[in-house]
Image 1 (cartoon, rainbow, N blue to C red):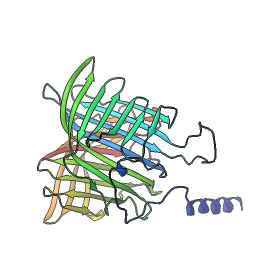
Image 2: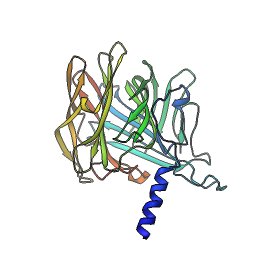
Image 3: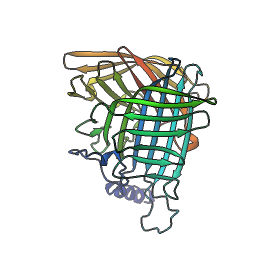
Image 4: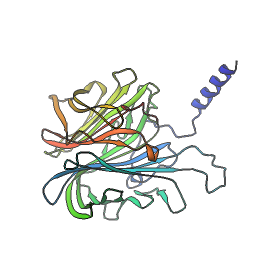
Length: 350
């Protein structure tokens, strides 16, 4: 009887979640949607890209800020009640080092330490920042133990709504979805500091923005995701949600052509095939770090071999309450981007 009552209580909670449900027919509005959406359970500002150092070498970088609404009692008057929690991590990939350099931060919102503003992009966490300036640029300042990033990102293309005009399915249930848009082909300029030396860098980046209340289905274990800036001005985003026990539970993406029109990719249009794996000596996880991505487009199938800048681009962000995952700079014929692999060290929980 107790088990039945518990099951019924769980069903009641599931039927009336404390968070907004992601639904179709969204209209993205800017600059407001660059800012936070605090009622939703989780949200992120996610920038990846390639940089060119002063000596001509290639570097990869990743900057991510997360906002989480833990569902605290809104009636609790205490300033210490964790109404919003912010996480951030950043990474630098340099083949001369041979492994990824990364740092993390975490704090509850408030007390002048952490905040994610509404109305426009302005996220701050213990001295790390990501914000949008009045002239339309994005700026980020990161100081980690082994490196520092001081980068500006200038949009050269309009926002790309993912899925159905910004409603992006992530599973068989329509509520398993996010509101999602991307800004590919960002022009990057700034400075990096490492080993006591500061150098100017230029490059190209990709910004992803997602917010959701129910991202993964119960039988999902994680995802493979890539965002590719292609040399002809086109952009490709593709992902697959992996099922526990193997196989794909869902997939999707978009291809923006050089002339700006967009082909939306359905689950049957995308195939990730592992070509090379790498086993982490630190966590024991094995990742498919090189993959053949096949995308069905009007006129035929486009195949892109994703090859990592180097193998050891695993991020262990557990100190900041985040998972272990692989996120690395990858090359492909006619372009470059990033590949993210989650749920390989352990099932991803969101």
